[in-house]
Length: 461
Figure (cartoon, rainbow, N blue to C red):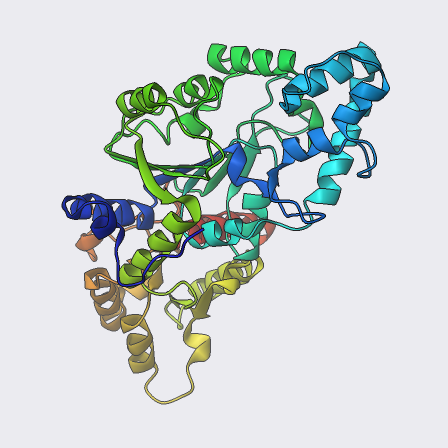
């Protein structure tokens, strides 16, 4: 795949008139308003035996079992089963094989083979997921049952909610996780290899999956679909073969509207999207088909994003500010600080607090750190808000365009009169129900701070 000239922007490469649209796309990405949808072709296994990357299920179609000795097509020949060798579809071959070789109550045996195969082949993650994990997509839908995207995000220290759709409507061992709008999300629409019964294998299952998805039985959780209904959001589709008929129904089931901006860079030369198909997706979902291939496109997004918002390799500076003379404030800070460290956020941010003060003018050092902060987290308490230096610091941070402010109500909710800039603005004061941290004690406070730390991790981009 070709590399882009670093002096050439995407807008120049395609059309100079598209520059405002490109700027809006980058802005949406930074603000968590860009949704990423990953198709099957983006989720490819690392090459083996000198072969090119291939999707997971396609590989399983070729290499059935715990070794490479018996491929699925070979098994069909071995068992003298009639099939069309020109049809390489995994669903087609698996359907032929399972119906003749497994009793209805022995499907679990085939599920275990899938799980074993995937576990052995997924050890090496395609490099493109590391590139995707650097970009701050807030809502991600994966059309493959793998966990490549989730693993890449964990390695970067992100907190997020991970869930999957189970078309069989089987009872789960645990309820779906809570999913607030502020939480980063990775949703596996085609099931999870960790739960093989949720993975579509045969043609009959593929049909049942589409029927259940469209019919809402089970229904995709509202907190998932609610993320896609806003026409002001941007969308990025990667790794799809839109010639496959079912994607029309899948995207419609996600309740994706015709947004202002929706991009699809070509994935490879493996397929050419038909003209009528392009017209359908453009008119129905506003998808714009781009000439740069996926890798080329992501290189341009990464470069232009870094030019605008800073290099990804730079750790963000997070300042936690509290009133040192208040024992309650100090206690709340210590509990939350510990939970932030446990969340893995240290992989991508530097946490700074009064613990870093080296002597001298303490307030001056806190002011200096706040002036340079990417994120400022003040603990709102009666003592903090009565202190002139603290009030001035929070107002200064609110006026800094490069600083994200995330206030926490420590033991006092009456901040409205003392810091009016927090009222009706774009700043979210935590907890959202405005209950003070002082309403919690002991293990209850620890659990509460754990949830807050997870939310803060999701909010920091």
